[in-house]
Amino acid sequence: MLKLREHKELTVDNIIELVSSANIWDRYLPGGIKPFGKAFKSPLRDDKHASCTLLLTKTSDIIMKDHKGQIYNVIQYISNQYGLSWFEALKKINKDFELNLSETITNMNSPIILRKKDKIQNLYNHLAEEEVIISIKRREWKQEDIEYWRRFYINQPTLAAYNIIPISHYWIKKGDLDYFITCDSITYSIEFGNGIRKIYIPEKRKWMTNAKSNMYIGLEHLHLWGVDVIITKSVKDIMVWKVLEYDAIGVQNENVELSYNLLCNLYQKYHNVYLNYDNDETGKRAMERIMNKWNNHNTTFNLIPLYTPKKDISDTIEELGPKYTKEWADITIDKLRSKVEKDLTL
Image 1 (cartoon, one colour):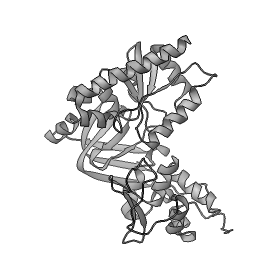
Image 2: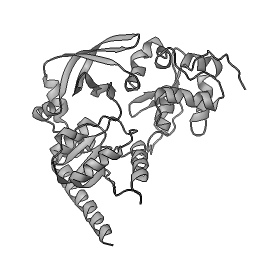
Image 3: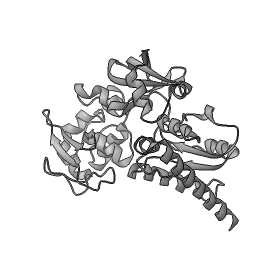
Image 4: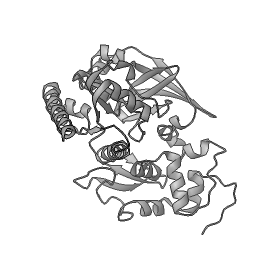
């Protein structure tokens, strides 16, 4: 077992001094590390066709490229595979390889920064973990914005209601880190008030936020009472459900635990509460975890899983249109509602 001085911190650089990224990939990829360029099925989703490859970068990093559009370094892969934060992924490597690195952070730069070119990339996953200031510069709405949101049949009054703002720049300050970013594609700030916001970059499928994980989205838009309410995982999905004439709220991400107080509040207002996360392995695992926790004899909750025809409700309405999506939603939710009522009478 490797022995280190106690002051050695748990950072990417200190890990790589002791164990190569190839060894880390070999441990955590099902079946071990693959030859560079050889296609294999993604461990992170239901991949019917081998669509992933390992590539060696110019800086000798090994990355996994999913040809669905995602690229992962080894820490990002572990984070996604096990539902961990960035620092939790480092802790897992530290434990599994018995590196004995100190897990007490004295320099917050270390676990965030992998290499200079990756600074902003790694910030995306960690802003919510510590206090951070995000400032923005607004810009005018453009035709490109309208066309993007029109793909999901979301209009400007709905965007205004959910405090979606187009921006041209944003600033991030976290401890000693201070970044100024110019947006090179359409980018939005979702405003929660009091300086709390989420930056959303559709083209890169990226987001960053300084919101706490227990901050739920859309509670202020719920009716005083109703029959059905949906818990989903993004503001975009909430707005699509609104287009379909359903009440919905959102969590900051699929790994967030639902609180007892939240569920009590929802069940006081609504007869049925549905979980609608991504229709992929990550989303399904998250829903199963939540239902296993709350749907038992110790509670009066009965969370109902709601799976969309496509990955999520936004993809569904984009690909199939509002008429079909509305028909599907009404029929599916009516069947689920009837099943619940039948089960209660047994």
